[in-house]
Image (cartoon, rainbow, N blue to C red; front, side):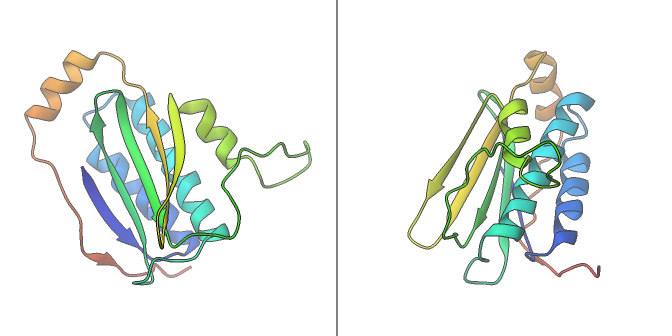
Length: 151
């Protein structure tokens, strides 16, 4: 699994999307783009609806697992439960988890003592090719805190 920590700002969603696209470059473009979109939605939801972790950051983790590409965003929790909404056609918000639920083969929420993790799994096609590609490259881990990007 690779991971990074980002500031809970809107700009972090784009930064995470770019890092994931780069790190998962060996995957087919449709899978990579679905993972990037899900990451954007999960980070955006954490920024809008949750608190930061105790260190003032959000934690993002991803990797290729048995069932597909796993992505998880951990925040400091929220007074509300992440749920798929049913927005009106004219609403400009409220579709993030609907997008996640549509693209992911599975997704869920895990509550911990001082944090909440929302995770999703994007299915892979042509698993044999992907396994060969992933085994031939080095994995990255980004554990340093990433400063907030200017808006």
